[in-house]
Image 1 (cartoon, protein in one colour):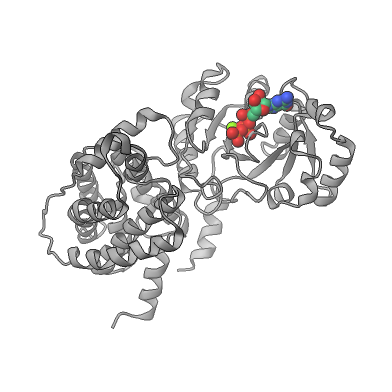
Image 2 (cartoon, rainbow over the protein chains, first blue to last red; image 1 turned 90 degrees about the vertical axis):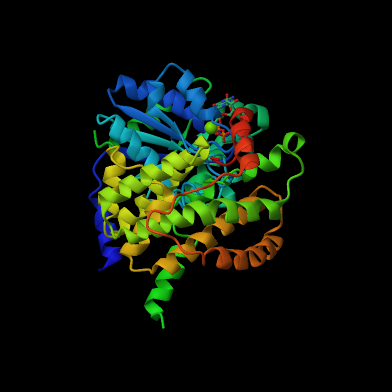
Length: 215
Length: 226
Ligand SMILES: Nc1nc2c(ncn2[C@@H]2O[C@H](COP(=O)(O)OP(=O)(O)OP(=O)(O)O)[C@@H](O)[C@H]2O)c(=O)[nH]1
Ligand SMILES: [Mg+2]
């Protein structure tokens, strides 16, 4: 039996919702981005579900459930066993099972957003788990972050630089950050967002519509 | 002599790198170690010994052997699954075992292990529960790993996943953890010798650790699923 051939066939033949990962350091705004994206997708008529990987509590899942923006049953929490990178990369089975379960319970679901627990710049998503993924950093982490060449920041399909409203307060030059991130990523796309004041969110949703949902 | 192929296959499936979700469960270790003010001093060796002798040997090991002997009779496996459910009193342990079993089935379905897809379908349709010991027993049988081998793999994994969790919780250093493993392996070897009859009942009860688990849910501060 040729296991590897069968494996790649199994992946290609998976039907169901598109799965999108959202990774990035602790506190960069991953949950805030999801909260902003939910109404965007609802306006666009996209049926959505969310999986969170909270590090210590079910806080992010509960925050999204309580937001009133989405049916709370469409939000699943997966515990990361102190290993936020393991649960999205080395062993994504609990996340795959959670996404499969959401699909089974909500057959109309088209898009599942999977938030990683806060981690460091080296965290990346396994393509066993997601079809496409974003990495969220924030301006307050410093404008030298893109120069640090973390695998998460380089390999993701879309880099999000969030909290642009804070740039003047932390002395960050956004133009320089954009240039250096572009160089580190060899021209792969990046977006600036300000989740506090809802800036840049529609552009992110547009990109997901065209690159992931093909609409 | 066991064939080299089979030894290598055993390594592959005993390795903690094999994705199964097991890393997210501590079987009460996190809970117990954090409730010392209420439950008394925590001792890793005592915990490990109790888990292996009073839970693994008399419950998971039996489930694995019985699942292995059912030779991929999926309906009979579902009945055994229900027996595991009924004999696991603590809810977090019960739910954890099902999620871990589903995690293991997920990987096996994708790599095409015989019967994995069919049984995973039964679990998703509510026709089976998918407890990890049952899933291990029948999948490892389907992979032609002998009963003895399957038992030892499970015993090793149970102990190693506890020592790894202890390292992640900061209870013991990574090197020290190997000393605990070295000490528990002969215990595993010894308890795995006792014969298992056809309908051997499943028994597991470690009162203090189950109390710790039930208190744990309420604290809201946890890294592990149980
Ligand atoms: N000023 C400002 N604050 C923001 C922005 N986005 C998020 N925040 C705040 O940053 C803090 C962290 O945001 P979260 O969305 O919880 O970050 P996270 O990445 O999900 O955090 P973890 O899940 O804990 O890793 C919260 O207090 C947010 O209100 C933004 O664009 N501007
Ligand atoms: Mg979050």
